[in-house]
Amino acid sequence: MRNRKRQKCQINYLDLIPERASGLGWREEPNEGIVLEVENTGVFHTIAQKVFHKPRFTMVHLDEQGTFLWPLIDGKRTVTELAALQKEKFGEAVEPLYPRIVKYFQIMESYHFIRFINKSE
Image 1 (cartoon, helix red, strand yellow):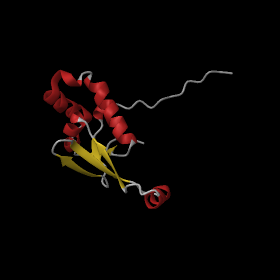
Image 2: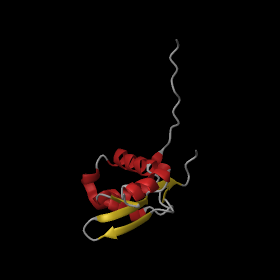
Image 3: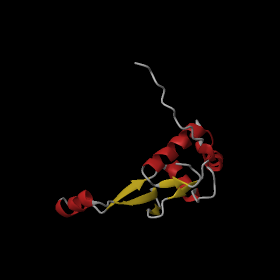
Image 4: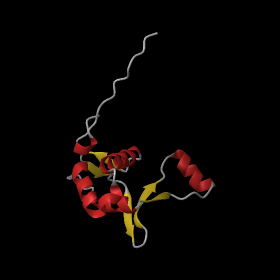
């Protein structure tokens, strides 16, 4: 058997432009920061809501750095520009800056909280 290497698509996340998901609700709480309101849709969620009295919305509380970044995600700034603003605000507390911010945006994209405007699929 031959070993075949999988070819991974190399994406430079620092050049991507994030945009918040259009259907996602959010609000700023005075002592908690930004709270994202994710609607639980689909057949199984509907059954769980009626039978088990599960909530219609799930609340996702962002940490201090996520609360700072969320309002800045406007579909115009790149991840590099957002990282520079975060570095300016938090200083050494965000180090290692670029791996952390890339991971943050990967997680946000995986949950469909954001999308990248200039990312080729």
